[in-house]
Length: 600
Image (cartoon, rainbow, N blue to C red; front, side, top):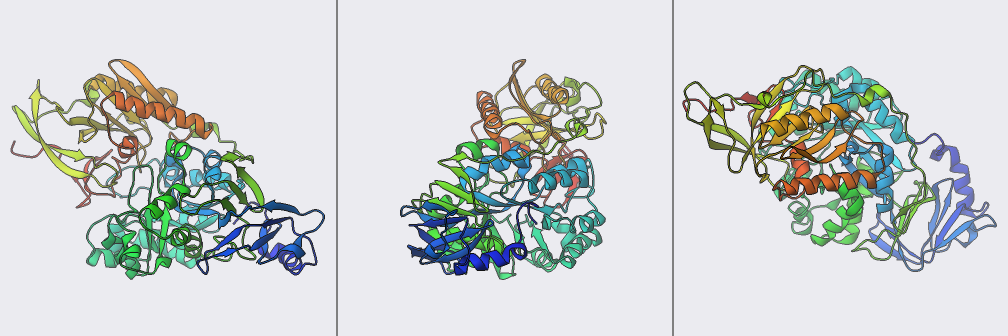
């Protein structure tokens, strides 16, 4: 499960024993610090560590017997030694970056292990896309494990993806060297109903002895939840309340508490530990989705740990939730997640456990970042040309494609409206009384138009609807080929001509995000790889993303990380109301629903 150049424990066990006993010199010794032991939850002042072949050989009071002529010695100068941070659930594509550039962005923040679910690219390119992500992940100087995506489409019958994932695909991927389990099982109604395909995917994973990722995004903690838990998912990151977290751990699942760019779910759930006193071993921190701007400007897992501490969590407990708890969950406790003999030598030097400045990062025994600057190369895959030409519109779109016809003779209509909720993944199912002009329903006031443009097969199809909560003013549009999870194209706007211009622009550049106002393009983030990612450096992509967010502000939007909300409007497995290429989706019922209410 690692870079072929990195030795397994079996390959270097003899040397680890020799170094620990003092018969051979270590490659690296760190002394003069305070070791944070996440197994015993204590700080061991003055303890030292010795590293050989990228693994910890000795962890104890005095590593002097491990020092030889060729040993590098790092003086910690009273700083804490903490394990490299682990992100238990994340999607690299949400950073708008390839695995290599994502790694380069997060290494300076102390993330040395990631458990990634590339189901975004799976929806566009199928198993081939997953293999490309997996292969580049294994090339990196840190640990990037892959969970085989489970749900493409996420909700069969409610959306059409570029490719589908089958139980046979899952079984094949389980034999790949970097696969640690099944990605989040988003089709929770299917699992609860005993859907044979979903259970076959879970079965193939469990037969391989690997971990099944969960995703239960409904508030109902009754029979459907218990049926889902019986179906085999081992964790869940969709909780938003203390009751959600408690319910999951009581069923033997790990509660994954997420802080992403737009998801702030730690504070309301961590009270299960800080107030209710539940065993913290079954609580794990993760990010789920972080865009490049957050990674460059705010941090990654270090940001999540700081936030958990600010919410009242003991710093040592918060660190356990971002290290050993994660490793244990994926069956890798003997491989990573702690500063202990035999484990990968992933360690951070920091001068404060609460504010967690990331001052020196070591991964597999090598310095990978220092003073916030990366010190290693992150190798790139040679991405094929056809992966860069996945946006197929089928025709030049026009304003007329975004018109919403009214029922014959109607002067006003009652329309269903997707209501965006700031900092939350779920939406509201709203209604609005809208005027009709020349037979067309017109968005007005706080209500804007939303469209889902088919982009995988070039059908020219456009599904139209309404959305509120962004605060957009007149004459604007924003389009994105990042449209979880089917990844068609989402266009939101208050001007149909601008919506057409934005959509056509993304067809021209091969994918990304573009913002238009009053006939001009205000910002463009090009994401040519599968319409999801750029292989440019994170800082460059972040600068373009920042300009995109600023352009959204120029159009009247004031929501925190509104782009993340925009990109989830087609996610037909999270309540309450979403849009797909097949129509408007009522996720509370998992069925298509009419945009215009009858008898109006």
